[in-house]
Image (cartoon, rainbow, N blue to C red; front, side, top):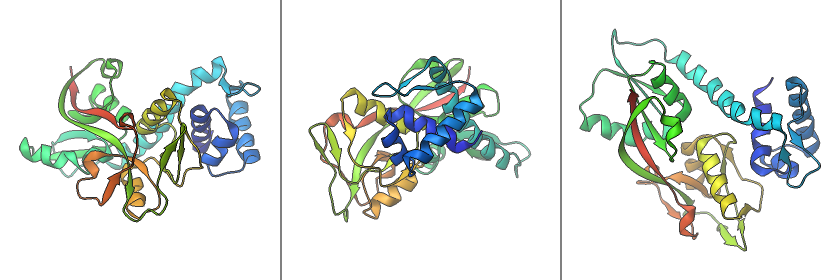
Length: 269
């Protein structure tokens, strides 16, 4: 099993098209198809009905989808947890949060609540939830897009609100525009399996909109995508809390392109 196979699988789940998935993964269709075959051989079952258009998941594929997302996040969360296992404090408050909140919202919130002697661990949303649920964290701060099932067994308190916005830099030469259900222009996307990526894909699918061109850049990091936006390399959906000092502007797009979410403080029940 290779990590890139999981990203390949999630890209095809998102696009339901081998050609577009290969483009999103910056490889040829033949190389992409070989990697998908190797994943299916490793798992011992076909994951897709290839003869259908769009490509559809088999029952085995449906079973693997939820596990693939968790596997990807767990791999990176395991590395973060190992790196943060040692502490300079004999006893400290352990706070889990996402990279975006750690780089923006968290510092003001900590100052307002006068918290000191804390260990800060950056993880994915599911990693934060799991850490609090297992008692590895005293609290977590996460973006939350709705759905109470993810919060089962935890207490939560809304401490802020934000939204994802499609933005462009001042020096971007070619604007992004929505023309007849096609989003045209240089667009940057989140890696398949990320929460932001899944929410954006669901919104576009709900309104029957497709990104026409191959993505300029793919990343799991909103901060990395924002850096590319500021350089004028393309447009991306960025959390508004990261944009306060950034010289970017909202793209001309329908209001439903904005994706609101809550910022929650979570603790063990």
